[in-house]
Length: 102
Image 1 (tube, rainbow, N blue to C red):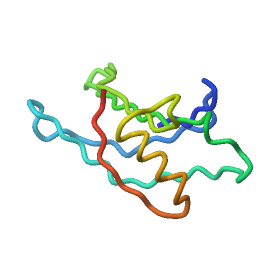
Image 2 (image 1 turned 135 degrees about the vertical axis):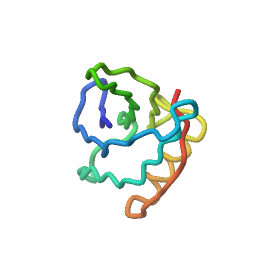
Image 3 (image 1 turned 90 degrees about the horizontal axis):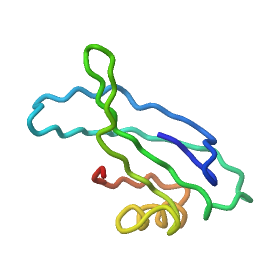
Image 4 (image 1 turned 60 degrees about the horizontal axis):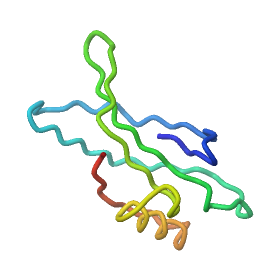
């Protein structure tokens, strides 16, 4: 996961490794909390959080399966934009939402 401002990576976080039980129909469940301490004076319109799902095989080769972008209207749309707006409106609450990778 990357916290990005104007194409510059500010922070990086990694989730725990998830194993796929059924390779024909992989479903991954990420129940992790990420906290990015930010100055309250920072502008959030130019921030985005990008989640990238990567499959790594036993030989160590990686394949990007898809991404989800949460951010302002510049970076996100639909459910991802709505989730971002809720996070901005309620900054001290834990908000959970399912997103599909693209």
